[in-house]
Image 1 (cartoon, rainbow over the protein chains, first blue to last red):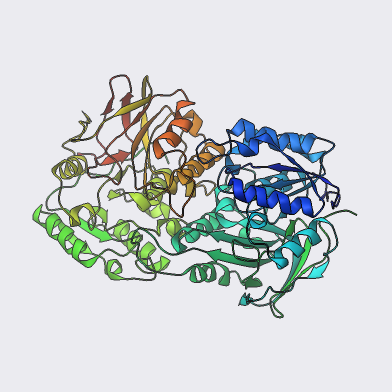
Image 2: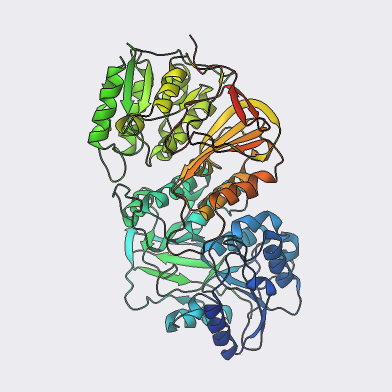
Amino acid sequence: MAGTVKPRRIGPGSNIAIIAPAGPPRADRLRKGLEFLRKRGYKLRIYPQVRRKLGYLAGDDKARASALMEAFSDESIDGIFAAKGGYGCLRLLPHIDYKVIENKPKVFVGYSDLTALLLSIYNKCGIVTFHGPMAAVEFGRRLREYTVDHFFGAIEGSLLPATIKKPTGYKFEVINDGVAEGIIMGGNLSLMARMAGTGYLPSFKGRIIFLEDTEEEPYRLDAYLAQLFMSTDIKDAAGFILGEFTRTEPRYGHVKGWSAAQVLNDYFSRLHRPALTGFPCGHGKEKITIPIGVRVMLDADKKTVTFLESGVEK
Amino acid sequence: MAGTVKPRRIGPGSNIAIIAPAGPPRADRLRKGLEFLRKRGYKLRIYPQVRRKLGYLAGDDKARASALMEAFSDESIDGIFAAKGGYGCLRLLPHIDYKVIENKPKVFVGYSDLTALLLSIYNKCGIVTFHGPMAAVEFGRRLREYTVDHFFGAIEGSLLPATIKKPTGYKFEVINDGVAEGIIMGGNLSLMARMAGTGYLPSFKGRIIFLEDTEEEPYRLDAYLAQLFMSTDIKDAAGFILGEFTRTEPRYGHVKGWSAAQVLNDYFSRLHRPALTGFPCGHGKEKITIPIGVRVMLDADKKTVTFLESGVEK
């Protein structure tokens, strides 16, 4: 890996592979999402693997890894959109041929469980990957202008560089003030913790780290952070952008203790690096599409996040 | 660490420190558990930290780590029993002085979240630690003869070596047949995965690995195993003893897929090493006390587990 490679920008007319490297999408949501993307002018190729189902997986590891590899290998495919998250990407990491992907940079979008693929591809191939909405999730439900605009703006190359505006109802709060600049990297906290020790997680050093999660009780978020603090160089990151942490209510009658916000505060306040919360990059209503691997300026004093470059080549 | 060190056996008249390195115990259960242990002739010293509460923790990291270190350092203390699990031991790992513990081997018992301490102390100090019932959990509820007998039998040195008999209602099933002999090591699967990459997890090579868990959906068990398979030498273990995996029902309306048993089967059947399920070492009704670090014979053909030595010195 010699420096970061940006994929070529895509747009109406581009050929998009739809794959499901984690869980199986709901048929109605997939249909709605595909319809929306087609209306935007994208030519979609739905890989048959998307309709498979094996337990909570969209087909076995071989089927899911093959769909990913075929989509990257096929010269006629310009971009790859994940249908949905769920669980399953972690299982694929050893089944991926990163040498092939390294030579075929293309726009690859997803989030949540997809974090495992976004980060391992960025780490092993040096390719900018995109943390953003999914075909049978955001695009398969009620469409939201903010999410839609930031998605196409990021992959079509028309939005960034830009200072990100807050969606209505969102509030940025400061854990630590200050200003930091660096390459942005991150995603789903639980997935990042589950990559600890595997060799697929990129270095955090000097980076601007963004994190989000859902359906994880505060004590679980605590454990993920404890693991990352012990097993990685996260202490040496330049700054932190914390997204939404949704559905974190304690279950099974566990002792109610710290909230998710208190847990995050406990870990990040002690680092004395700029850290902002409330960023629209999680499982909440709105999300921006983040190109992993581009330079970003985090100004916690002004509560702004500025992407200093685009994630795609014109 | 030069070979495994066994702590001296304890018994009626021994001085026992009660600490809570994870969550705060319920007052009624703690009272009941202490009463029971006193009746058995143990002299208890309840560390004040046990009554602390900070969120879901029994006091801050400093208070919990200090109680543990004091209990190990104090020459007049013969054994250390955890009051309960919950969450918090993972946070303590970097706060422990393993050099001190190495020179003060003593019986240390707990399970669940305590796995982090049992394994890090075994790994860093070479001391046999005990995966067994807790003062304000098993001993604070309805007492069960099987659990009680195996506990005192293990720490007082009267039970092992022995072939473990199944409790009533338990059924051992075979994933892979065959016979294996090795040092036993293991505990709570989620905790072991959370130790991946931290440097505190012992090697799995040539070991007999036991695993159990509770309140983890099947896809989470899958993720823990995926992480361990990528980040450790678990593939080189000699054999596997799987305990109970309780309360694994999918939540949040997740896709119902594989059961916990199917997940375990998926990972362990491909290793072709002796693997047995249903062992009484989890969050179920009965549990044996397992000295981590002693030689064990696993005979999956005969469905037996034989401890070849005691975990304590006479």
